[in-house]
Length: 294
Image 1 (cartoon, rainbow, N blue to C red):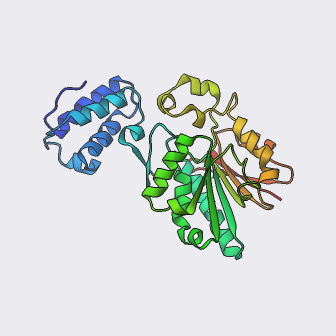
Image 2: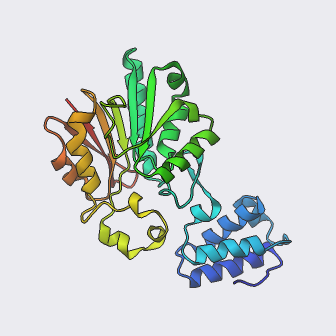
Image 3: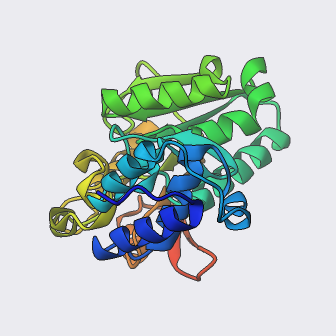
């Protein structure tokens, strides 16, 4: 437990020392983010008011203790700022990653092109939706098309807990009534109880089991079902790709987030006749594979 500091400067110094000793690679940043959250200010205010007194430091102490134990900042605060949205986060689902913003942008662009192309109804499906962040970004961008029935958006997950969190996030942003949530194993209901999608997005578990076992950083706190992709990280991706022919509409576009150095393996698993494009992130790393089905 850190001591009881009297000022913002003292609180940040003590918390930074504690988090550095606990092994946080971003100790100062963590301390600033947590203190700003606890006192309801932003980091700029902290830096501008180092002599401000902390009247009730107990909540900050508790937050620092949780972070020192390795818990991700997003779980301690209860939210993640992602794609210009505030997404509720807790141990029910994976924390939205910055790289998934690339997947969201690609999905939004693809849906926009298809809606502009003709008046045919369109079905988009977010597989393994987790916290619902990606479905939320799509729903907010196409709220009118969803309300008018031009677009149907399905968000599915195998975890009922994750779907509960997704429902909370959709409700907080006022789009819970326009997204169909489904507890499903990949695209299992597509073509049966639910329609075949024209656009599929998926951020499936793609971390190798051995890496998950090491429980380094957030991997020790996030749900294993959202991380573990099997021995090579490709188990779920392989199953989805194998199933596409029977589950998606003709000419569907499938957008998949994946791990670094998995793009070529995914290309090799693509259905016959599919066109495969790799989309790099801002660092030049392959992060999203796009498949255009015949």
